Length: 485
Image (cartoon, rainbow, N blue to C red; front, side, top):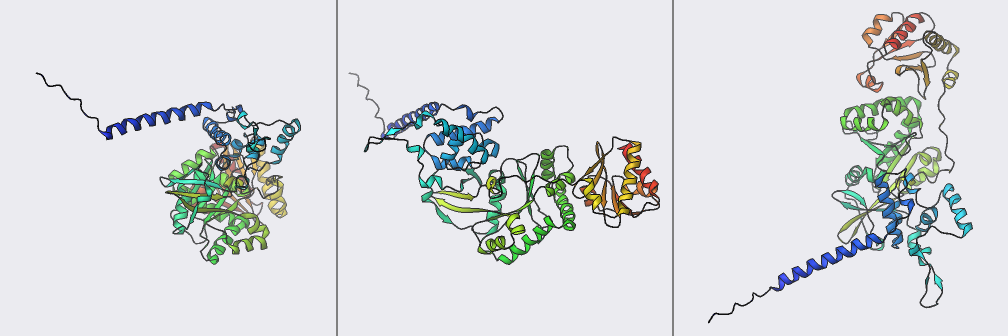
């Protein structure tokens, strides 16, 4: 007789594996179905924003409609202003955000009509105890409305916005060193300051009184802003911080120091091919020297990043309101642990550091030709006007473009720069020193260092003009430079 073949016994381990796989598929299916439930409103996909912005708005909507108010607010706090303004004002307000004057105006007609932009998921529900209808989501908890920071989780040595809202479980930890905080800021600069920002780092000189990090914010393309960045721990001696920031303020406020500061900054940018290329891509056809000069005009500030408040700093800001009070903007980055994760809170968000300023935007006062001429003697005015009249008579398409520190002579590109001094004119001419000396015999010529020539974006030298004598040789050389330019 043949023996019956016995069935192989299935091990418990294999059975568990099969069950786990089925469970994973089931969970995945539920997640997929849940995603499909969201009926995104039209404001999440405005035509003027990019696809990545649409995804961000949809994610905010998902968090908000799911009742994760704190997470929604924290997530949206890192949006660029133009993206955040796409969120309907009533939804933004309920998430804990503050409305601008424009937002309040948009909200008014909604309130008058008794309507709301909230989705159907927020329809009133009956309270089980009282039987009265109550919209729970229209009454966010105190925790949600007082959220005044953005939260990030550390992943692969860089920061990412987190949607975990269990902030009560955060345990504060201290930074081991100033270097730890600095590296966090540098590796996550785009996350902290926006994708339309660029951080320039001075890796070579490390001057005691020169910032080793400069931040450019291009969020407003027409008016990019420059920040001298200082990173410090609250435990550090305030004396060193005071000395550095005082020098930074002098570099931004003192006209004589401004030029030296910009020349040195240009050197730092030139020293890094990568940094220079990225900056050039942001400013497009504009020359770096011209861009830096304009950034200096547009209310530059000092961005102080610390791990906690410092009373000495507050005292300085309250005492010297026009300098420390207006020019020093502070951001606190605190380190926390939550379970196995490292969480960082940032307050205020970079986009909000000017919120305490007056709502009315200050118009940038551009220097005019008249501003320059009114500040000098009649002799200097006569020299300038004689050169200008002669050039325009020969070619009326030449532009005389007034900036804060100079008046440039331009035809398609900058060809010369008039610096009107009290006793003379320093004319920076975009022409080699060798050729200039061949043509100029009656005026003093100053040699410019290689770094200064890079600042002006090409071979150049300075002609010193003190009176109207022998101006013809200067005018003739200028005409030649314009013609060859």
